[in-house]
Amino acid sequence: DKQGTEVGRWGTFGRGPDQLSYPVGVTVADDGTILIADTNNYRVVALSPDLKPLWIFGEAATTPEEQNRRILASPAGVALGPDGTAFVIDMLNCYIRVFDANGNMVGEPLGEKGSLDNQFYTPSTLDHMEEDLFVIADQANNRLLGVRLNSVGDAVMTPAESAEGTTTIGE
Image (cartoon, rainbow, N blue to C red; front, side):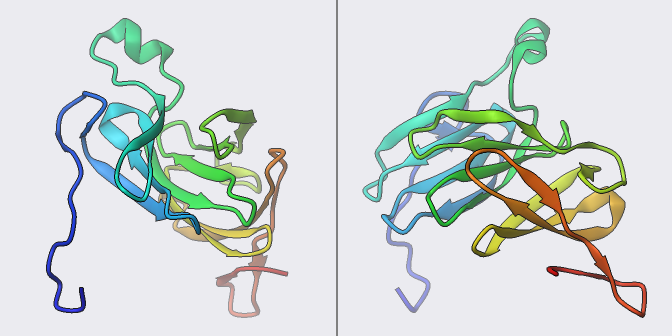
């Protein structure tokens, strides 16, 4: 409510299906579905509007062998495209993973580690701006990037330098 009164809660600390460990990113779809980047459990969790688990992608890794097999090393930011596609920043792998509304991974990771176009260095969060345009906080490169993303996994980086040398977003 407007007074800041808690109206619901989900999860406790841990690695189980109804637990979280360092949730960093969260977004809510138009239909009320909640997506959580559950960072230290190396997964993304989708909840229904009434806080029932819909799907989980990724899994907690407790042994070195499991850590080497994990697909998400450090999910951080999560944002939704206009068609409901989920875009998840993987901070340690320095790329974006794409998921459909059912939690299925779409295509290959977008981006790679570095400081050039189509590269990130510890990206931390992203947000949807309009149509296929997203803004990404590229933490270790000390910049914001405008990125065009779509549900088939295409990415075109569009940073632009202004006359003052600061990065602007868009065309």
